[in-house]
Image (cartoon, rainbow, N blue to C red; front, side, top):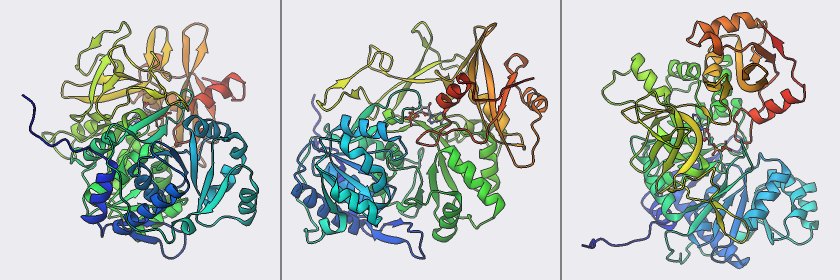
Length: 554
Ligand code: ADP
């Protein structure tokens, strides 16, 4: 029997229409660094999105054309989030932290025809222009330095426009087309932590379903009573889906623009009083140091979503003490990104050790994401909390391929997709009988010592719980006898002395087996970070190979 239900397409347009009417009074607040932030209601953002769509159509953007953004988190970027997909074009968020060669590769690969750029980032775009033959228009939003403006205007092959001038005079309503929900709405490239950046094209349908999941109580569960400080960049998996989720339920958004340093973030929290915030662990480490040095009233911020890399237990504890409850989440660009969220089961006592252990896992799978662990011989492993294997996932907001290039063909490399269509995540871990995922490492970071595996993340977490250590990253280095051994690179806090023997003892007394203890140590000024703020182990391994690290053996 066929169902009797209406087949209404699930599109970004529906989210936009809903947000700007039913939640028209919710706000997008953008930090300006001045005394007053910029404040716009969802109704205004929706009206401006319509103006932007008219303007882009005037520039020749048609169905399926790719419009790039090189922007911070701000209201104009939210306007582009809704205008571009709703008019039937494809939004491509460019990662402004990538080196120039990768950025131009990605913009060319995606076929960006128009790029919206914040004035403060014009200098970043300029050197890319000669490598972007397909680019026709650049739209600059916000103040731009005279020099950069002059250089942009002189650039050959592109026409330069000012965002507000381009919008001015256009109608504040747009006759949005009825779109097929399976069409691409936006493009995001992986940050290339372990390989070349690869493009993922989210569909209208996948964004719609993912937004509903973000809003479920078992995920972020926010409402129009909340103000979310969206620190995770809009170019990093659509800010983990927050802007779309916000237009569904009216969550107010506080956008930090370019003010991502710990001091302005702390000021934003004190002045604007958000109830929720989302960012990778390195941002929270910085904020914690700032709040310790200069305490602020952060009492409204009771819920914090951390993901992107493993949250060190010491960080979670420190935030608990500040009254901020951390929710650990796992995901990937390929999974939109919400994969799992660590909400403990209702049966465990709040504040108990058992509850803390649940919160440290990567979390439970939602109904929309299926997970399985696969062993080295391709066998599917049981959910017994002990059998470790590579995590594979599938679901309606998990990608089934990568974008192939300007021709639009997709690719399905065998190391990323199983024969039966599951995404191979490259993450290694266990799943408990009640469905909680615990990742021990990325497959590429795991240390293979004498046929046994050592988790680099576990060593890092214990090291970072030591009071003398600000940051620690552990990588595998070649070893004649064991194949690979761990090299621990550490950043000491001011005034601490480099006592590696004491650190080995600290590891041993915190549950690390003797044979896993690193004998190679190096002090670094800072752990190198990727474009989305993760420890960059590729760079560390490279430095070791070049002999650029001063390695001490203990
Ligand atoms: P890249 O792979 O280039 O870093 P992504 O931002 O898509 O780009 O990263 C996804 C990866 O980040 C995951 O496969 C996983 O290794 C890591 N990750 C994300 N969240 C967590 C988490 N909560 N704990 C541990 N690792 C995480």
